[in-house]
Image (cartoon, rainbow, N blue to C red; front, side, top):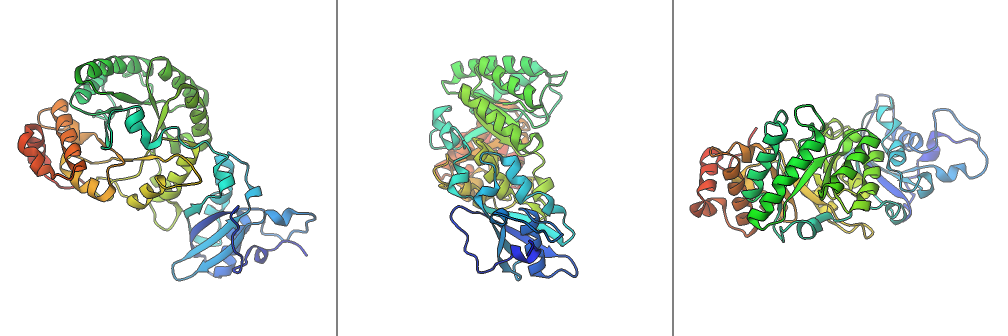
Length: 416
């Protein structure tokens, strides 16, 4: 007898510890039963097809199994045998569990919600080098959140303007200057010039403040160019690189992780384009899974949202952050980054929601301060330090004029 769709369904199956277990949300198409939809997902994402196949040998040992169906919640669980996957290849894994199934006519909607990663597969990936330890191993943040800022306007500043903004932010108390996701090597602010000038201002800021400062340098490019930029960052003494992980692709992220290990560089992951996959709650790939992938591939920071306090739509920021900092077969943790519409007036609310083992980033919430970038940085750092101690930002503003001015401008309201 050949392999048929129904051979991929067994609700009595108990996943093995070695299986990759994936949770999906499904909406079966008209005329397709829940059993039919679930078995088709398991089939298409492993080794089946629409036609009945006659096979010999152990091919069926590589079949996925749809092992649980909850029609009320719309959730289906599929278990994949470990041997189906190439160890250490995230592109190959995703081509299975989030590949052709996303376009199947048998389902009107399908969303990869969560994954339970088996030990053997996890150990085939490097994971982060530093994770949350960057707060003490690279920076002087201690137990407080690391702070970061992106120069605004997002793009258009020339190299000297960009570096000057960095100096003003660093001397105001910010730990990290960050490139925006769409700033790479444009004529108005060339990559190498920006690297050199920004690090010169970083060194000056360190001398002035006595604190360690660094720069999240966007190396996003095509494969070989990106690796050359990583090398250049290390050559000039930068401790971090930034990668737009979704637009670049996970195979490229894995290459960057390997190159960064040679130099001891940490990786800041920007999630630009993630919402193309995760914004519609009934289709695509959840941010939770994107974050899991990033951790396995080896990033040290990743943006995970602001628990609804910023300007961007969010999923379960708290739950994602907890997973990034949980034990996963010994994998180093990841430092979540809260960003997007933050300002000083939101810091105590944010840290109440997410705790202090995070990085916090503000762009307009620093540079839009009525008295400029330096004052905005002072206000943001003071608010962050206070919130980390459990002090309200209003109370902290009583002895910080810069914070008082920030609260006068923005209050404690969430921007839109």
